[in-house]
Length: 155
Image 1 (cartoon, helix red, strand yellow):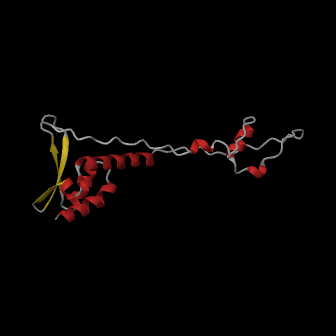
Image 2 (tube, rainbow, N blue to C red):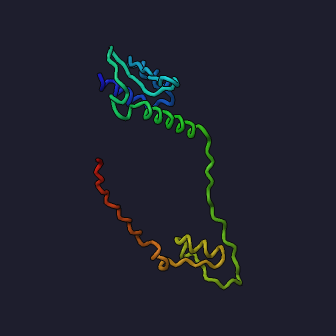
């Protein structure tokens, strides 16, 4: 019975963005979802799935089906759904054409178009990027040693 509930929840979850959606999809499979509430606050804290007289806590079916993890998954699905429906404007970059300067004595950098930093440096005035310098900055940082934990007897 656990596996039937597991399969149904796993199949339904990606298509649901709220608890109501999940409950409706599971009801099609004759599976009930009952919430556990905190005593003092009345806040939801757990979920119990049931089918054919058997009931299981969500986390007993699978760790991924605990209330908090299912809630996080449903919120992520709802967020993903919002981002799909919201139109997104993505800027496109088109390099502006280089003006020709017939009296300019700098060499052309068209053969070096793959080096973005050199090109950017030339555009913004004399910044020269030399990949051979500054490699000492990329040296690995030594890890700190952990202190050994000392045993302290309690009397």
